[in-house]
Image (cartoon, rainbow, N blue to C red; front, side, top):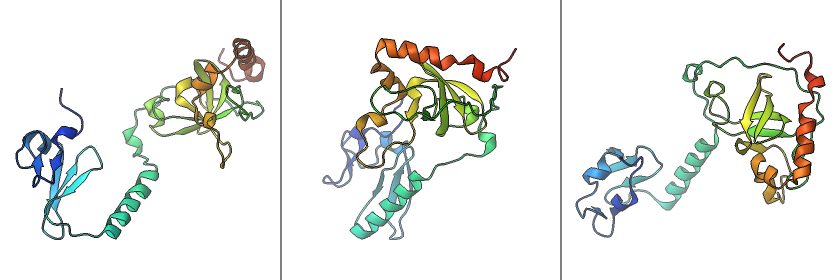
Length: 216
């Protein structure tokens, strides 16, 4: 099976006059070439860039200053922070999902490890929803808690079952943020007492809240 990215053993050895570390031949070797694209720098030297990664190599003498590198790195970081929204035709059709008005559950904000219950707002990590909703973070409210959590999606009011390890807490303190605030819901459930988890599951059903919206 071919490696997805350029293997580290086939990186160039600059000290050995740009030769492959593994093959001892002029770089890029045959194994490295299939993972690279090339173009010309403004100085005329060849520049190689990884097809599936951020790394790049400028052969020959350096034609840029450390200040140039800092500017380029800052621009790359800024671009990486901006979310990428593919065109609508990128996503497959959304399957039919039931919709609800916003559940009348009081907002709950966790105060410690394991303090998770209905009304907690979470982010659904990419891959937690059907691809029809896009591979981006989605804000949702927990309406039932368990290994598979029921969530109400604020985007369009649809209801989904999402694995607890694909949910992250929303909000929380900005300064001196405790480590447990970055846990997934699954990690919080591991820190709950068995009695507390059973009580949460009984409370989470709340069928009377949704009697007018549940399918017959």
